[in-house]
Image (cartoon, rainbow, N blue to C red):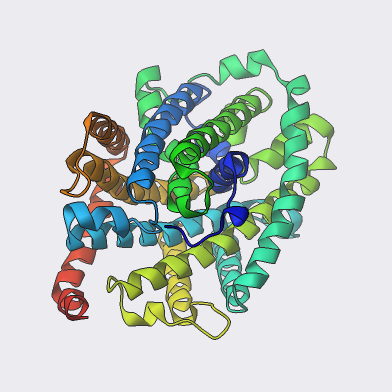
Length: 433
């Protein structure tokens, strides 16, 4: 039974918006530039990706019913697939969280650079991203409470101007610009739609959070599925509307080259004065998201270490609750990723990172499908569980199919190296513990 009192539990509306908020992040600010390289036909990709996310969300909601106290992928993977798969799922999920932080840093500095009296370039972008990473590391060292306050400030002041653009933008929508941008890739519409699934699915990472906090949701059997599906539909609608709107205001080739597409659109709508306002708002929101997700990376790393899946150093917490050494290693690793993924444009660098993250997360999501499909002796799978499990595996298969081969190979190499290290160094100590 959950230790959270009924009075402190949240209802379906708050849970729904919590799930939606966890998905509406850096993709909101940079994905339009990434997708503009293919064209407005990616609106169909948004619809398909939303359907896949709903299937996966339903699978996680079912798992929350079977494992009401779960707060880690290991809780539902290990009973069905064993400790090795529990390690892989937990570790890949953790790795994807801090690699994904780089994409947030890319988005944040892409907007921040518009406010600075400097020219864009490789060195400037790399230096800016590294500065944001280490500033958020320093803030995290102060403990969870300052990060929570900082993130709350960033959400309030970061989203209001952007919401104004989404509401007022339709007065500037040009059907001619939108039709001209329909497909600028040189490929067939079907190839673009399926090929864009992997980067688009970055927007839906976080769909599992409703299931992970089922213990604090009132009547979770009913409300976790509602919150999960409702949150996914809200996020999918917001992303789809913003993508369509922006491609009908600014030509696709201009949008694709922009490091701050929302600010560019605001400038077209309201004039030059709106560019720094929107840029500041987007930079504030993305920076707050970066600080919050670094906190999540530290916490998930600490939990994995406590379960014997990561070296003990990741589980050491300071007196203020921060995962000091673990976050220091994470910040170093993020700095290396920033160097390795540097590309000619912000949108191109963002795409490389999010495709890598999506592939790692999909591997973790696939185990959720397997857990439902196979079941355990204590929790045998019925027809509904098997259907949801198979649906989740099909969704993961489509996402794998849409991923570039080099990204897929790189993700598999990361998984195999992590598993080999676990088998060689960590397993014996963890089992004896």
